[in-house]
Length: 276
Image 1: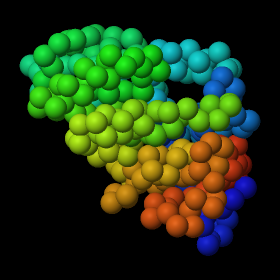
Image 2: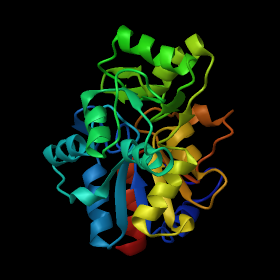
Image 3: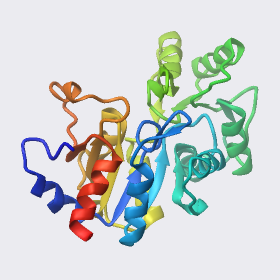
């Protein structure tokens, strides 16, 4: 286990005993690809044993909540559907609240498009007012060209999540942030991003769980999303080294976590020392 940076193991206990709700990343944190990471289920069971609240939150906009729920259940952990949050919901809520009558072109998978349609957003293929880009694993050049055309003609450019890469068992694959960078290179327009670490996500999570920001711990493997969401607020951030980030990445990074652990299993060990 790795404790708090430049601090003692006791400091880890002091921080963790004040956390009332854990917000858990999925890819690289709970699982990697189709494999559950060792210690993840025991960590979740420890939270349940001690009546500590938690929610899953994934930036991965290539699927919908149902897919992630079923994936975790197949890996051996059963839980209620209300524990799953996803970046898709954050941007959908924003559009419904701020631009309800806009025509929206979605550059994304069928899962993402279905989430938008089920929310009664006006999804179009022509003459769009808003272009939404997700982690489109079904990416087609024609649709990228359309997105660029609409943005050049004045459409608002929104990105579901800023991740450049998605971790898999075999390495990394390009994520939403990489697709948006390609569109920015063509149009000169930079999107507004949702998902972690945006203030939109922090607001969405706090509204959903009912805890104050200082009572929340965001847990994940990526500095610029999972950990950066703790910037300029009082939330705890916990970096796990089971996915993208490595210790050497912290040396020159402006983004620093509150705590660092090798895995969720190591977080579980400290919680066990606190609560038994």
